Image (spheres, rainbow, N blue to C red):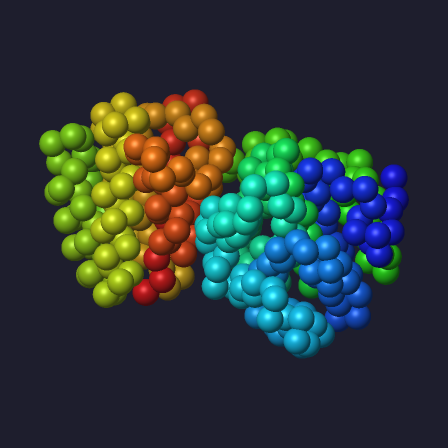
Length: 317
């Protein structure tokens, strides 16, 4: 199946999620700018969330039309990939009138993303399909084929139902599309850190667990808002363990690569891969713990196993 991009990806399904493979600025702008202009011409709300350098390219190419577009630097808004669906994509889409198509350019994976970040990035791309299934939206995801490794490009074929190859402006189906397999493959175990401060907690020691985390975070160099975020994340995760994870768990805190890392393990089984990545209705009681952690942490990794769940979050010093 192919369809000219000049005709807004052909007849649009409720949800459209293509990957754009580009080699240079001309290929990048040759698809992204018409995508934005076509959306504006159709009266669609349009957002662009890409790394700062590419954001400047699109903004400059759009000229005055950029004023009608929601522009976000993905290096900031999407530093934690777990924040992108609830805090960027759904935040924009859910603010629009019901049934109105939205167009979003989202570039969550760029050269410079670390090996630690990548599993959360690729799971994010796979989970977009579940988070937006049946909704009226088009999300275009660019990939730099000159700077990204081959396995990243291969994963893009698996997480996007359609692709636009480099040098083309035609959308075609992806024979490798298998988002559920990607989510499962990158559900990687998080190995323990031998020298981490370790504290076992239960319902009677939640307050102590928070104080332990704050004390260790302070010793390791966290201050101000980041220290407050560590305290909040610890409180939310340990409370979740007590309420949903068997009544107890283990807290660990350590430092690596300029971050203070907080981890909570328990015996609960987190069945929903979108947990923490889905906005919560205002009238819903509870269900905000992991979402809140995703919104405040610099990175969150989750491992869901038969013997329990591990949530690990990073805070920059």
